[in-house]
Length: 284
Image (tube, rainbow, N blue to C red):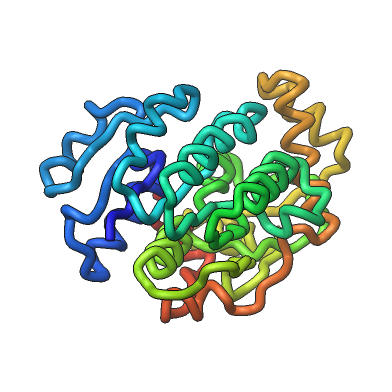
């Protein structure tokens, strides 16, 4: 088996490689796709083959997929360009005859109104249209997404959001990486769409309490309206587009888009998911 990890030098990609090795994969069976190969020198030192990989260059992607039978497509970080970039990988995988194609998607990607979902929906549809033998991993929120909020809470004693009493079934990035590694290495899973989330769906009062536990100071959750939240973000220097994106995400949380959890993630990784406070503590 040869496993290509796209975005291998990113935070999730590196953790997937760590998990593959911990689960017994041979380094020579792993191929790390990296836009900047110089950032993957540590991976090469571990016996992992590093190949150039640029979502925007079809010829480079095609070359990277030669002799590859399993692919993990980690979604691009370039919001607005993802669908087109992913299509390049999907097309190359179809030509290469990839036997297992795993994609990191978004929760309920094909039905949710979450603001970041449309590009994931388009990618899932493209994978299906290409006829790839695929596994879809719909990753809920990463606890690490709240690192900036944790830093502000440590300074101000406040976590502010317009998420109302919405809940988030977050898990650590390492939890999702373990799930990807488990699916990549195991037989089966083809055709499955896994909704992955933490074992516990917390609200922002819970988040404030966890931040207080981690920082050692009282932390209050300040619930804002979307308009007040956007104004506060603008006052902090964010442009209107970014502020609108953040408040739209919180509106999705308020509406329950990230609240579902059924234990699928913990079953895949064979252990409980990382508790909220523990995940936050790792960021300090």
